[in-house]
Length: 365
Image (cartoon, rainbow, N blue to C red; front, side, top):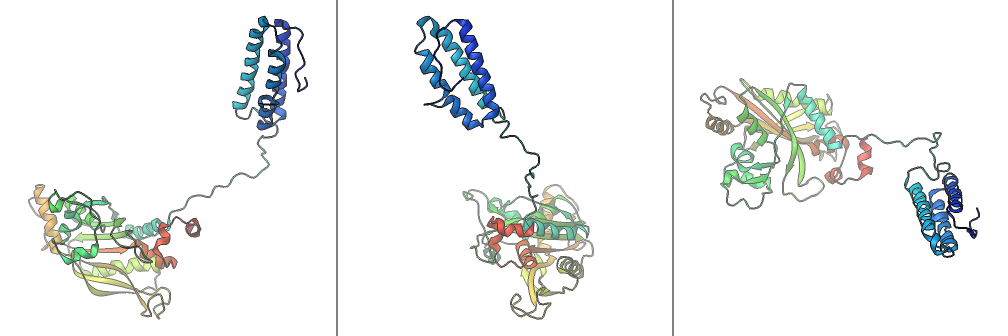
């Protein structure tokens, strides 16, 4: 049938059935010869669509008694056309089919974020030394984050942490007030309260401080801390452990050295430096021409920390103190993941890790 609707002389049921059967055949043919948009415009176009032309030519000229059967068949045809458009792949199956000779879509596999990758590398080093992983909440109480770690109230060392405190905590006792943890050290306290020595744990996690963002600082960053508690643990054990860890991370030629420092939760305390991996210790701009890069802090666990743990274990019913400083000792250490990742990959701005810039992240794929 031509696009223009031919006039109908008879409107009896037999004639209508014959005409609309032919139209249905045309619809079926057009679904395979036209794409979906052309098919829609051809049959349902508002001005020149076939249904519009049929309506103008037949419905208006039909006698009153034939308008109902004609309208019923007309609506059935329209529903048939709309159903063809709504069915996936029903229209345009010849022109829009799948060409199996074309190459498929290649999806690049996901890779770990450089910070997560570096953190896992650090953790793996200590796993190989027999350490297990412990984690804890990022929202901590003042007791676990400060008091149990030998930060007395108003102690100047609290100021260096620049803490983000949770709002509306004034009504709570000081030790129960909530804050965003400033280090992963609270997990050390939680672990010692939960279990007796020996303990060898490594603690990776996210921490928060109210630091202004710049090339080397971020209010959110990551740490990996470690704790070893047992009988006869000495500073020599600490030095040997960290020297091995630095060689595992930066190469066997790396040297370590320790300088006296201060941390409230360790005594004695030390800062650890490694020989510059960029100039092999000769001196360059990266190490400020010193040949050494400061990397982490460490020390022997302060007896005051053991005392805080003993107090909490006694409240839980412990009779014989498991953390008696006369019988046990331990060491702890902590390092910033971002700092190590920046050294490993030669990154100058910590902000790159958090920018979400795929051009930066794809370098580690």
